[in-house]
Every structure is written in C-alpha cells, then in structure tokens.
Amino acid sequence: NFTPIPRDDYAVGVPLGGFWEEVLNGDATAYGGTGSGNCGGKTGEPIPCNGFHYRLRLHLPPHCTLILRPKITP
Image: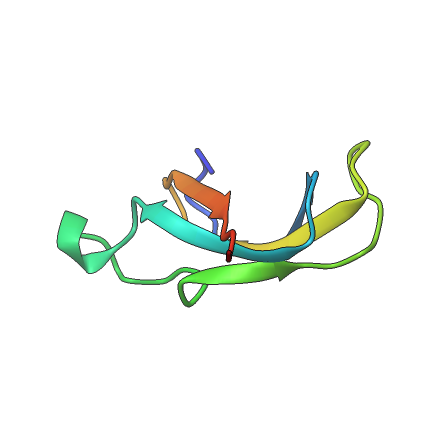
C-alpha cells in the first residue's frame, strides 16, 4: 500500500486455502511502525478472486509492504 490511507478488508486472490502467515509487515513496531496488521496472518476463503480459487481479506497499513506465505503443515 503506497498510499497514506489504511485499507481494511482488501481482497487478494491466492492459489491455496488454509492459513497464510504474515512473514513481513513494514508497519511492525520493530521497524518503527504503528504495529497494525493482520494478527500474524489470515485464512484463505474458498471464494474466487483475481483469477485464483481463494482469497485473503487483509488489512493494509499505510505506506507498507506485506509478505505472506502459506503455512504448510506436515
């Protein structure tokens, strides 16, 4: 999110369901940010979005980069 406005319930299409772990949040307090984010991750919903079979509904902090990855359990 390269705007000064936070975005709530921002839908992003993903290829897999299950839990997506937030591995980097540029708004984390460790980086001098406010600490807003997605509570460590979000679960993919089986709703098509952006050409994918699942979607994540994310909180995008202002001026922030988020990186998420699917949490694969053995």
